[in-house]
Image 1 (cartoon, rainbow, N blue to C red):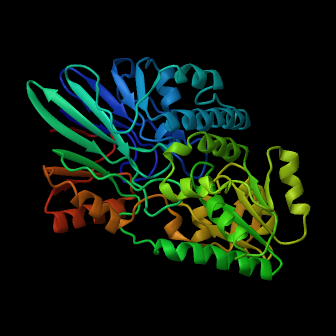
Image 2: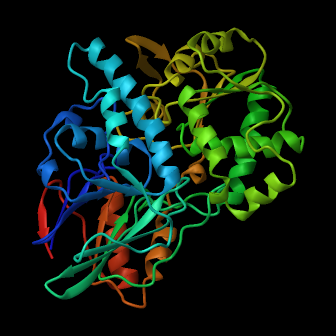
Length: 454
């Protein structure tokens, strides 16, 4: 067996894993590289493998850094099935369609061809095949797969693969992005009891999040402080999962009168469409969220909440002088509507920017989080006088202790090797070191494009 990594190697974007045997080739995820620009040049590179030779693909979840180059895979000749959960399929359509429109706009701005076009997303969607959690699917005589709940976002999956290579069966486990329990709406990640080889993410492989109980208090206090100053609270938020999670907690705070009633704007057409998918798949929610729904609580509808779909509605938000909360994409402040609000509000000390998502190196959000006093937005130099803070426990990624705990449960058949990916180099290397020390398992931090024979 050969395994190679064509993204998310000592970085957190562009997930794409190729597995090859003498008889089968498949990829797990095919994500977009994200950074200072939405359309990073690396996304245009040719694949290091022939997409026409891929027998099938598996999509762990619908975040752009995991699904964003699937249309390019199709463009380059892939025509086989893509297995994913039903929520992932619906969310991927929303995310990739939005991506295609943004890519067309950026391509026109920079006088280049777009990475892919909307019609290619539509054509790709015909190749998706829904697979329920827990169901073992025999692809052919060489491969069986099963998806388990990763607890990361709605529909996210851990992938179990059984490979029959010359009469010998080996089990591979791919963590995908593991969730950060306890989290609103989604269920906790499932544990796996056996594996010969594990590929594990390491986004926060060298970090420990604040306790989840502290998260709600921090959000509440940040809202109260911003309102007390008469300011605007800006929350850059990924349209998928993070927006729904924050709405869930703002719903609780508003309805229980723990924060004053102020206008709360969800300024993201993409988040609005993603929220409608969430409402469609309530059977995937955790028991707490379902209990609230049964009691008559609409999780995504409360006093003061306003969804702004059009750009005209978005521009009117900043004409409202009283205190307000704005949730807008993107989560890393690159693209979407949040740059407009930052440009308008960062220069006022009454206002506040609350970071609740991972900020990739080089992004505007990372620069602000690192304390930049001036930033460039739309070729304009902006003074940063607004407050900036972060809540790490809103991350939908497990931190180091939770990653180690998840791995420790694989003990019925203990893996002989753990491959650590999807993390910046320092995070991946530290997690690998901790796995070797605590779990007594050999580790590997892969290099981009290098083929490893197992």
